[in-house]
Image (cartoon, rainbow, N blue to C red):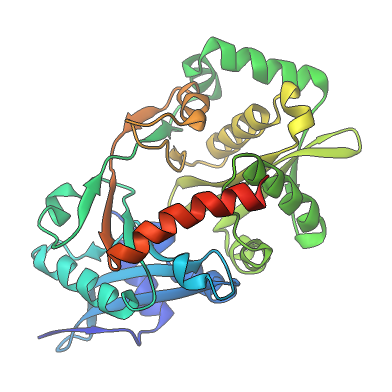
Amino acid sequence: MLLIINDISDCDWNKFVDSHPQGNVYQHSSIFEIYKNTKNYEPVRFALLEVESKTIKGVIQGVIIKEMNNVFSQFSSRAIIFGGPLISSDLSKKYALDLIQNFDDEVKKRTIYTEIRNLFEMKDTLDTIPDYSFIEHLNFLINLDRTENELWKSIHKDRRKNITRSEKYGLVFEEMKDDSKMDIFYSLLKTTYTNVQIPLADKSLFLAAMKLLVPSGHAKFFLARYEDRYIGARAILLYNKTIYDWYAGASLEDLSNYPNEFLVWNILKWGIQNNYSRFDFGGAGDPNKPYGPREFKRRFGGDLVNFGRFTKIHKPHMMKITQYGFELYRKIVYK
């Protein structure tokens, strides 16, 4: 007999995720812990338990995110599932749908929609999921199982020129070992997110990641420094030979010195030196809509994939209000 439960030890949970061929950092219990310590974030998870053997046969983990912590929070509340659900290979895909249904039952009264952001091909598993719509969404995956020279040659020549220029300019690649420079890091992120008019997660997310993920080897924070100024920032997540590009920011006044290109190149080199196999660029947008970062990522020579996303709207009328309200919010906040 199989039961869906939400009271499970981290040890048992991680044992299943670590053994699954599609196990990923976003389904690991460490992410659940940092979400618990992040303002306006509420993690939600369920496990599929085989009662007789007391063995986990499937997991799903996601988070409720509210962009605003006030009376308008209900208009900005959504649930996101990264890289899940994960189901044992000996079970039918019906159980994946059961886990998603339980997740939705838990979040539907508190969120406008649920979005499953796929890190791998999920159409065969989720093609019959009720009330969900598939939306194309691109990504670039870079192979790190090669030499640094081979990787360099695969990068577009214009991108190589910019990296070389950043090095000649004198940029220094610096790892953050603690949170002493978190204000600088967060300020660089905020500069970029404000410029593109996208809400940024609260600083508590990054403080929690520094405290909980860095010591366990599941995250690293990097800065690009020029003389005594920091002009670029990037955070990555780490799991099972994969580097996940997580958050990035840079000084707008210093973009001509290519801190973003400099940081990505040095992280890729770090990955090769530390025996990582893949760099996941974290998304490249809807192929049918313009998206500036797509061209930046494309020129690093990765493989283009379209794993897409699945979305279910729990409150259609509020969704329409939210779409209008978000545009108004952007005009007011980012004017």
